[in-house]
Length: 202
Image (cartoon, rainbow, N blue to C red; front, side):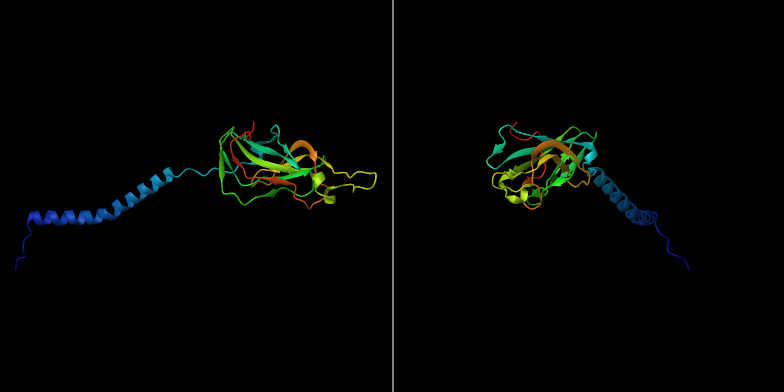
């Protein structure tokens, strides 16, 4: 009995099909790896939040910023860390005495912010502050209650203690201002950080 002989053309075709089948998974794997590598290079590296140690925090006092019942200011955050970083949200702000004791309630905030501010090295971000005249806020702010022939007394803060957004280390900005003797009235309000600085009006 003789087995049928295969033609050379048929053998070559079968070999080609077998090779193609063997190479298909390898080609798919290579394509997937190339796509992943492209995605990795296309996605920017996440930038870390700005640490307090790399920021200069200062108070910008615009001319004519006072109004009936208070004044507004701009908190400036300048990045001197030598590398880019981000700020997002609201700073923590409170008035402090010369020995660092908090005077009155900390600053209130508005609605949560979703804006992330990217600060290049040397860049500045700004948060607006409004500070009420505590002499108009009632006896909770007085360290000495008014009596006949004796005026009330509100304490004078030595400055503002400021926590940059999402940081647990603060810096104190020297700036004497009328404060509140007791917690209760929220007399400072801080806005979310926004790109740029110094603040508008200068």
